[in-house]
Length: 394
Image 1 (cartoon, rainbow, N blue to C red):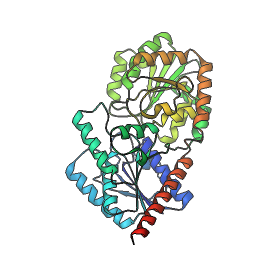
Image 2 (image 1 turned 30 degrees about the horizontal axis):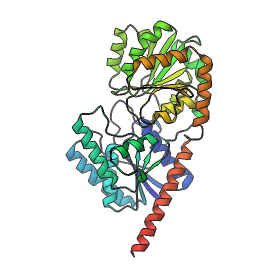
Image 3 (image 1 turned 135 degrees about the vertical axis):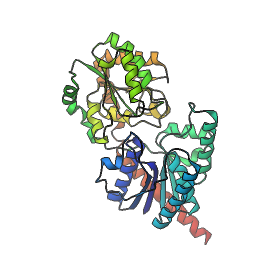
Image 4 (image 1 turned 60 degrees about the vertical axis):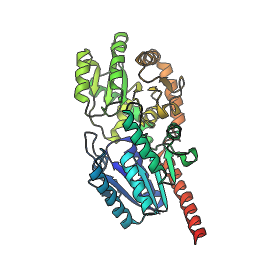
């Protein structure tokens, strides 16, 4: 097949890793011709393609395809997308992210590409936006949903959310979990002692980790609030924040004002192939983002045998089985967050058992080869339906 993937930007992030792995698998294991179309990777999150210069995927960059809404630039991006797709002549266009998904679906549909698919990594509308912004994004998603043949959700929760919002009927969705290279996470704890030594921490320390961009709605403020109580009960507790972003300075000031600087370590921007070693140094992973499709950090920690405390948002409950692979806490419930963390810190055997159960749950579900095979099968099915429809119309 000739397959074009469209995504707004290839920053270091879960949706981008998912997209790159899918493109690589289609090239290497299925013999497809693949083109990755993306805008510039602006911002402190880093450039995923620059991190892996030997990724092997043909890339077409569109300079005006950018995340912020800008009518003039967006119209230009749409016309450039049409030009690139017209030249490539794809059998399938597969879009990702809000801007790339909207413009990519419109361009592909206008060109009558046989199969147009969109992956929902996370809904662009959420309760923390002004009502008019939420309404605009919901309308855009409804409009674009009528211009694709199928929508892939990375979690059942995404399907439920979009169906409830009237974006598309349930039969238009299929769930395919976001794949990853699982082997590094299965072996993550091998580097545990070296990483801890590098940080000046020993085995006596209890390490609570969080992997997320330092950005709004990621819940770092809630973790700082919880840390005030946790360190009083467990002075040997340490907090490892993996990732970078525009809120780093503000967070560091907040932590300093709380007298907690000695308990926190910021890694800064971390390449995807280094995430496993940081997870291996943890005793617990905490995920207190207020919105997320299904954060890759959750299955990554469970694959490493590390239990999880997570806010009960979006797809989290599909891997964090409350009381079995970790604990679910209501969003913004810092009291519940503290209670769950203290329960796990007090019981190493419970941590071990939850981590092992989580590993068994995730080991097949999150292989990138499993994801790509399911996506490729969907392409084949939709393309066969398109060809059958075309034959009937002759």
